Image 1: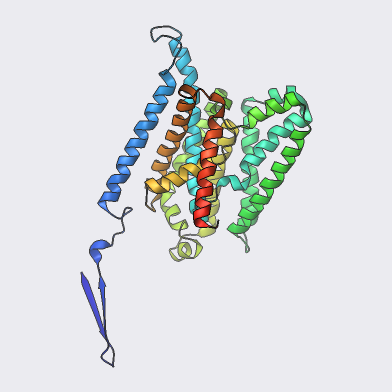
Image 2: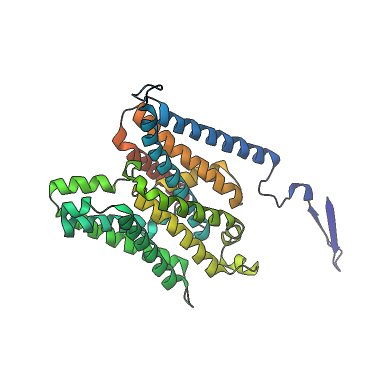
Length: 354
C-alpha cells in the first residue's frame, strides 16, 4: 500500500492511497473468477462432446455389429461437422462484431447477410423456375453465394469506413436499410410463387444442418479453419479496438484499418455459415450473450474459446433433444431462434437502448 500526501499553502492535507494489491492487469479480476472460467469451459466442452456422441450413436436403428452401422454414423457425422462449422462461424463473427462496434446487442445479421441469401434463393426460384432452383447446388453455386455476400460487405465497408467521413454507425444504418429492402423484395417475390414452389423454397430458407451438402466441406473447412485462426490471433488488437476509436488511436492502433480487417474476417465466416446451413439470425446473439456471462473478462483470448464451447453445446444439445426426446426434427432452428429472440428482448428491455 502506497500513500501520497500533498500539502498546499493553506495547510490543506490531501491523502491518496493506492491499494495495489487489489489492482491487476490480468484478464480476470481474481483467482476465483479464473477458476470459475476454466470449470465452466471444461463443463461446456464435455457436455457438447456428450451431446454430439449421443447424436452419432443414440437411437441408431442399426445394431453396432452390423456392417450398416458405420455408414449410418458417417451420415450423422455430416450433421456434426455442419454444427461445428456453424458454431465456429456464428460465435466468432458475433463476438468480433460486437467488440468492434462496442455494442453487445447488435449482431452481424444487421448487415443483411441472411437477407441477401434469401434474395438469391428466392430470385433463382422466381426467375428461373423450380427445376433450375433444384439444380442450383454444387461448389459453383455455393461459391457464388459466398462471393456475393463477401463482395457486398466489402463494398459496404470500403465505401462507408474509408476516407474522411468513415463512420461505423452510418455503416450499420445503411446495412439495416439494405437488409430491410432485400427482405421486402424477397417477400414480394415469394408471394407470387406457386404453393408447391413456395413450400420447397421455404424449407431452404430455414436454417438447418440438414441443408448442408458434404460436397462443400473441402472448400468450407479450410476457409473456416484459416479465417478462425487469423481471427483468434487478432485477439490482442480486438482488445484494444473494443475500447473505442479515441482510446485505440491513443494506444497506437490504427482504428479504421483494424476495424475493416476484422469486419472482412467476420463477413467471410458469416457468408460461409449462411450459404452452408441457412440463416440463423439469433443464434449468434444467444451464444455471445451467454459467453459474456460465463467469461467476465475483456480478453478475447479467453472469450473466443468460451463462445466456441457454448455455441457447439447449444446447437448439439438442441438437435439431440429435439430429435431423440421430443421427436420434433423440423423445429430445431425455430426453437433456437425463439430462445435467441427471447433473450434479445430481455437484453433490450434491460438496456433500454441499442
